[in-house]
Image 1: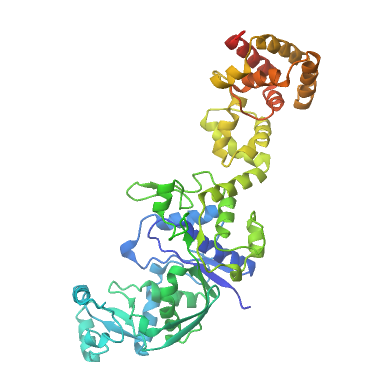
Image 2 (image 1 turned 60 degrees about the vertical axis):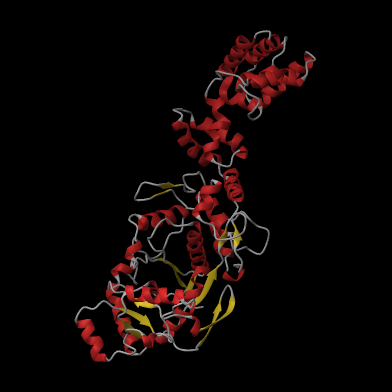
Length: 505
């Protein structure tokens, strides 16, 4: 296989949807699998739809995901510029070649004239298409003389350049995902290649850039399938070898019908963008990063939306994904997005995360609650609680009682825990705890169980009010683990406070 060079080429017209992130991811995995090059190219030829800040958003999103390009606007490379608006002088040469070889032509029709033709066609219920069957009835260089065209151009008459689609040409493409695809050129209109503003359209710029950047494989979403015959014909018209194509399936709505959209996220309460996006008007859209997802979990989830490793594995780090990835295992059908599955992936990664790393993340949550804590204590707490959470932000709700003495008690649980003789039992427990030399969970459990047996008490008669005193509710990990972490003094203080609050019930 020759040198693999792939690209992700978004337009800065708004935030990067997770479908776009998945396209970038598959290109990245494919490049790394084959020791190739992954390029980020910004396709900003459509200035009418350009959104300020969108390019920066794309770059930051990919960086958060760990999808780092080898060549880009930021990283440079030998095939730049990597922004199409900075390559405008390049495209004119190829427009001229296409016109000279009779594969493209000047069209001087005004937008109003074309709108009128569309309206007339609509009224007669026959769609208007600018193609081989209509072009000779319109205002373009296929019917105007060379002199007439030169005069119009000299007079600064606005024009576009259109591709001259051949009649009844069969186009056969072997797509790496979909197999053999056949098109007939009669189904294709004469697309605009060069606009009146002096910039190329996506179709021309895309082909020229892919050729000059030596792109070996074009891996993109299936929404580009209708453009495929034009792109293949452009390669032929310029006498260039086309790259190999792979068109990826859609990411579908949670119910399985239709493409996943921002509206689905708004309606069902989940993000569809990798990181938070703020529009120029100030409107804010949620992101996976801000919702507390780990980038590794997000990427793992996305990788399996349309591809599988051929076995039952689901948790796969990026190195494993690179090693296993193949275009052949990308499915043809769309993949249904599941918000619950996305949470599950995050949960799995949190469970596997080293306690020290999780404690560092938890430290940010503790700051929000103005808690100054001992890091070694935080590590122990994270170790006890990480199996209970799907997001780091949930840790505080599971751990607050390690940092604050209860100032109120769950009424329903207190009624269950505290009986007439409970104050006396808790007083005896305090006396015992005060005498124990080694104040650690296993030893505490042994000594307290000995006391329970000696006094012939039910286990729940001691442990339920003990939990109430330490936590204030019927929740939390093993009571003896809590006692060890908060320490002897705090444990006894909390038992005293519970006795004062409930007395002899």
